[in-house]
Amino acid sequence: MTSRTGFFVLSGVLLLVALICVGEGVQLVATGKPLGIGIGICAFVIPLIGVWFLRQTVRFGRASEQLARELEAEGGLPVDELKRSKGGRIDRASADAVFARRQTEAEAAPGDWRVWFRLAVAYADAGDTPRARKTMQHAIRLHSTEPARSNA
Image 1: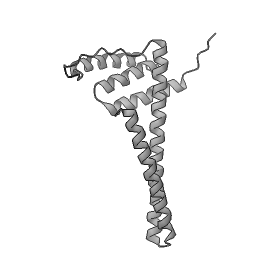
Image 2: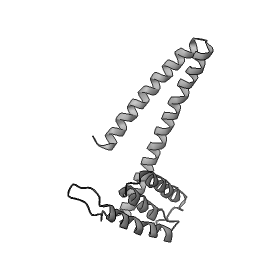
Image 3: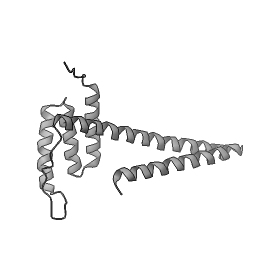
Image 4: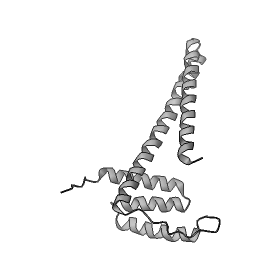
C-alpha cells in the first residue's frame, strides 16, 4: 500500500469514527444527566480536533507538492546523490554530508524557500522527520510571502 492510499484509508476511518462519536454524543446529551452531557460534549470536541488535524495535514501536503512542482519546473529539485547499501538503505555518512551542504546553503540564503525545501528533503533523508516537517513548513511560509514574479 502506498503512503497516499494509506492516508486516504486512514482519513476515511477518521471521518467515520468522527460521525460515530458525534452520534454517541447526541445520545449522551439527550440523557439529560450532567455526566452524560459532559461526556457528550467531549464526544463533539474530540472529532473536531481530529478533523482539524486532518485538514492541516492535507494543507501541508498540497503546499509541499506545489513547491515541489514549482521547483521541478525551475529545474531545482534536489538530485538523489545518496549512497545506498545493497538493500537500498541510505548510507548515514552520505546523508550527513548532503545535509551539511544543504544546511550551509540555507544559512547563506535564509530568505530563499528553495534552499529550505532542499534542506527539508535532506532532513528527511537523514531520518529526522520532525525537523524535516518544520523546515518544509518554513519553506512554505517563505514561498507564500515571496512577491509574485511577473512574466514580462
